[in-house]
Length: 189
Image 1 (cartoon, rainbow, N blue to C red):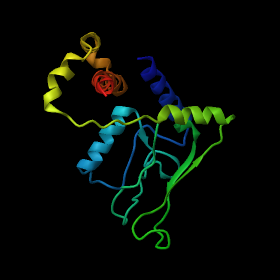
Image 2 (image 1 turned 45 degrees about the horizontal axis):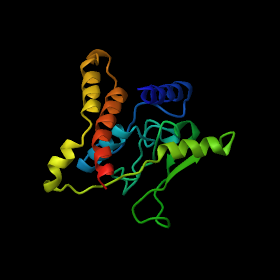
Image 3 (image 1 turned 180 degrees about the horizontal axis):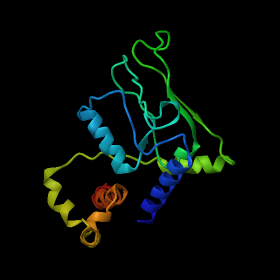
Image 4 (image 1 turned 30 degrees about the horizontal axis):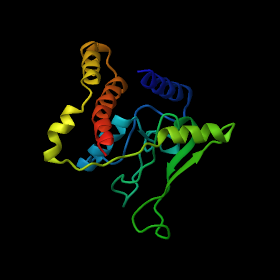
């Protein structure tokens, strides 16, 4: 819960104190296909943010990045990296650089010390593990799930005041739930 509150504080502070970014995001591309929906959901679940249409010279624009008809090139980052962003913009189409895509450009402000930036980036990077489901191991998998953790999550959900629930709080609970299953898979290797 503390991590979620810290992320939220960073986001609110950055969006409130800066004219470089807005909490809302705009896009010239009005079509959201299933891949876009999945990407939005993934980013939301892991606490990542699109700079397109939200920051720098692209603020409240969300310029097209492909064939002047769609947005398919993105800059996605964590709340810890957001304060380092000086500018973000989408260049005009240039046939010398690409047949279809516009360059997505950003400028990063130097932090006072390199370790701070390195730490922020390292905290953003996570390992992704893909596991293929095996039906014959279903009972073993279920038997190794930590029921106490599931009960704790269930209590957190029951105690959640729906009127005060924020997306970051819900995402935090989803991450906790996901980790209950990921730990079983990692321990099985």
